[in-house]
Structure formats: C-alpha cells, structure tokens
Image 1 (cartoon, rainbow, N blue to C red):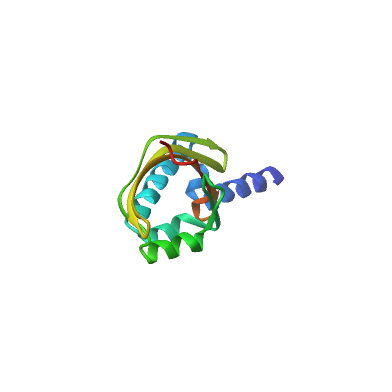
Image 2: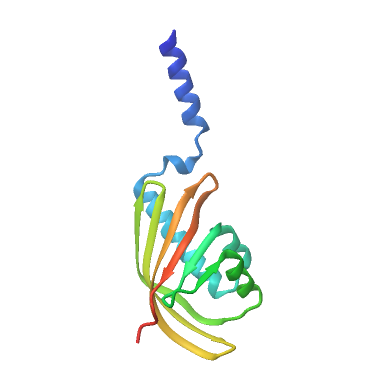
Length: 148
C-alpha cells in the first residue's frame, strides 16, 4: 500500500512539474540561445516590453569599464531611445548549460547614434541566465572593453 501511495505521489509530481523542468540539455541550450538572440533584437529595437519580460528584476550589467546598470536603467534607456541602433547583432554565440544556469558568450557588433554621436565597435560579452518557475531569465551580463 505504501509503495502504491509513493508511486501515485511521484506520478502526480511529474504531471505537476512545468514542462521546462523536463527539457533536455540540448533543448535548454537551444531555448537560451534563442532567448538571448531575442534579447539582442529587443535592445536594437528599443523594445521595452520584450526586454522587461527577459530581464530578471534583480538584473545587473557590468561593462568593461566597471560601470553597472540595472534592469530599470536599461528599460529607461530604451524608453528614452538613448541609442538609435543600426546594428546590435552578435556572432560566434556559444551557450553552456549547467542545470538551471546557462551562460551565453558572443562577439557583439554595436553601431548606433547617441548624444555623443555615431558609435561603431565590437566587444565580447557573457550573459548569464537562470531557470525560474516562469522560464529562463537573464540575470547578469558582463561586457569586455571595446575592441580596436
């Protein structure tokens, strides 16, 4: 009888788990890769709704100069259209997944205009995602110094 109850409890638990908890490592890798690509496109388009959905509430970005930005900072910048992008695309994207944590590394080409004029440079970045009950969220980003 106890074994039957245990089996029923395990079956109920398996049904109650959200589908993302059952994803394979390859599926997690593909999901995070697509999500980071979607995030880069949202930044390019100053799409605050998509950025807000992907960024964790306690998100932090650290630039190559050591300056930090929060989710609120990035959303305000997008709302105010501080940068008008011509390019915000990455190449060489690599995704590594360790359980509920994933890191995306890529070379980002930024070409935009802001209050300081035209900007055109490349940098390396690492974006860290964690799996939450609501799906993968972007929690931490770190960017290198601008490349020559």
